[in-house]
Length: 161
Image (cartoon, rainbow, N blue to C red):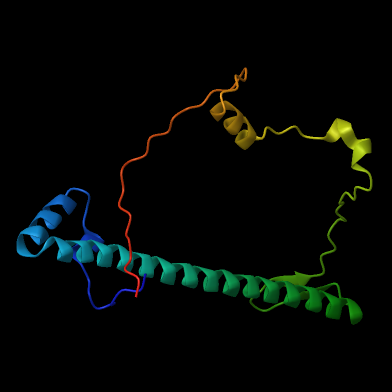
């Protein structure tokens, strides 16, 4: 929801103990319709701020990934260069030294026939299927439905323009 960025409300920084007082004061000084807009603006502004944070977080993650890739490229290319010129270790003036590191090989599993690996399969329970069966009245030993009650919240219904 895009809200005018210049319309800042006190709800955006209010604590749980002050929201009712702010809403009472707003209702006493304006109309119920203005109160609706006020609450909607508050939530919209916070949603916009969260969207900006999400974008910044994604950009930072990309920058971090690029920096890590650059580090790995420098390490790999430097090791290759040292190896090419026949040097395994160089001492520095400030940095103690750099050496070629040859890591131990790692192993990965390639599975060509899953039916031959039944002893290694992991059993998981399809909770959605169990829940639907219980909702349809089936009795299942070892499973029961638990009712989860959530607090009431507002739904912001935007006007269509």
